[in-house]
Length: 268
Ligand SMILES: *[C@@H]1O[C@H](CO)[C@@H](O)[C@H](O)[C@H]1NC(C)=O
Ligand SMILES: *[C@@H]1O[C@H](CO)[C@@H](O)[C@H](O)[C@H]1NC(C)=O
Ligand SMILES: *[C@@H]1O[C@H](CO)[C@@H](O)[C@H](O)[C@H]1NC(C)=O
Ligand SMILES: *[C@@H]1O[C@H](CO)[C@@H](O)[C@H](O)[C@H]1NC(C)=O
Image (tube, rainbow, N blue to C red; front, side, top):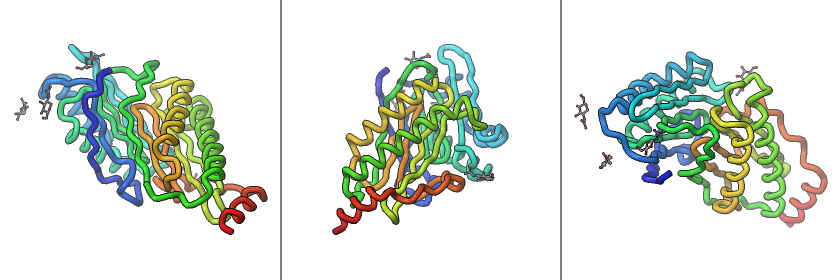
């Protein structure tokens, strides 16, 4: 697949406290003719997607077969999102896609609490990993990196395992999703969220998330919070709760003695 264009335009994110994060429409693959059947259907479905997603309990997908291109559209909100928040997030995303992707055959946007993607291709079984987009707060994390890596990697791995098994087992049947926390220091908690779109297998979801963690580390290790967005998977973490995702997540157990020791020796 040819990467034609990646547009990085900020849209207003309704479920974020800060606006400097995960906020870009990405369009790629190839071009369609404006006002073609593909375009007319795309605009029609995207413009009514917010109400469809909220009416369907946070997830809606549809596909249209047509010449020369099929059209597949997915809209979803993370579990527990209030209907207004979900609707606002989807609306902001579809407006952004229509504005920023005037003639590209695939477009996606993945703010924290919702996701919208339209495409003329199926993602099922295809491991389409690009175009991807890292987003990171370049401020240094300010703790011993060896210690941080150990806790962060354990947390990401635990969150990925939870997300790639939710598809089958939980009440959130429609998506791969997990939000988990870990104690970094006595006073700091790491909040992590990962997601995949529901049209891929559990194995592909896990593969994508694991690769994304590795790629995130390459670009952004040592930074204070960040995210990495791909066409069908997403990771995000920070030192504060975000997207209303951690309301019901149990607090982490107090740090183990070894962690406290290494933290205090680091601070000494
Ligand atoms: C999707 O669109 C691209 C660009 O126009 C085209 O090359 C490709 O064949 C299309 N794929 C499908 C499955 O329609
Ligand atoms: C598409 O259709 C709209 C409404 O009919 C028209 O205003 C616009 O000029 C058309 N654009 C192109 C590129 O044909
Ligand atoms: C937290 O739990 C309450 C009560 O079960 C529920 O209404 C709410 O949606 C949950 N929030 C999240 C973010 O899951
Ligand atoms: C796609 O749209 C852009 C912006 O309107 C335009 O500059 C470009 O020529 C178009 N490309 C094709 C292949 O239609």
